[in-house]
Amino acid sequence: MSFITPPPELAGKLNDFGELKLPPGQVVTHKFPVLTYGETVHVVKANWKFRLEGLVEEPFEFDWEFFMNLPQKTMTADFHCVTRWSMLDKTWTGVPIAEVLKLVQLKPEAKAVMVHCYGGYTTNLTLDVLQDETVMLCHSWEGKPLTPEHGAPCRLLVPKRYAWKSAKWVKGFEFLAKDKAGMWEDFGYSMTANPWKEERYSD
Image (tube, helix red, strand yellow):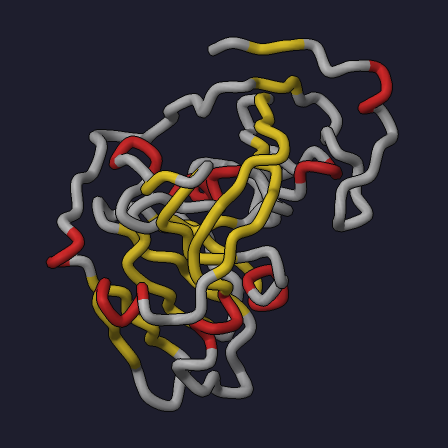
């Protein structure tokens, strides 16, 4: 990894969301380090499916062609890893989560979501975090398609949370009545993972 010391003028600077640009305890990298639990998963686009299920009126599944025909967005956002590196001002392209959620009708009791991935990885989010305007399903980074090491063909992006919530190789959302721990959360990582509060691990 190649880290640099952030310039003094970065301290106290706010991002577009009104938050400090660099969360406490983080250092800046110009690279995109690869951190994966287990083997890199390789998913062929022709076989990729994404399923919305759980507390929805009717489950819905779509394929890659359907996904790429949904409204697209390119956004500049930062990316903060719990291992203390941050990438700043990177561009991400994909489908805003609001467009994905239009495909199903959530039941009133839905309060959280379990993110499911190829390879068996899971992570949790509360519904309000998932519905943030910065959250998207991404297929490209810095103008190029994601590589398998970074979650190709599609990964979740949750810029306001530590990067383990931005799950690689996503294949579905399961909507739940109560927040439930995913894989890293079961190992003691924070359920909420707010970088500006340094919510790295659970109490």
